[in-house]
Length: 123
Image (cartoon, rainbow, N blue to C red):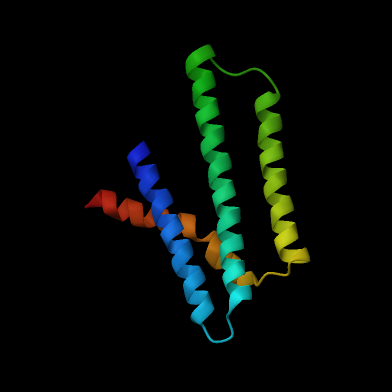
């Protein structure tokens, strides 16, 4: 994917998040708590996307600039990024008690945006 494709994917994910949160406000039995759950799930997905994007870019830069990376720093950054995701998920589920379906909908925005972008590129 090119930078333009990634920018479109990110924009589509933000629009899907806004649409999902807006829809959650309108659904009977939904409301602000369900909308917050959608936003929380999208935050988790966005953080994961950022971690993967940054990790791949860092790895590519290291390989292209110096050959294969040989320091444990990259592994430590990998562990810290996913520990951050685990901590965020714990807080959202156990402490904030956000709705699981809202979290699932929010976490699905990046894959759905990727499908939309793949269809767009296919045409």
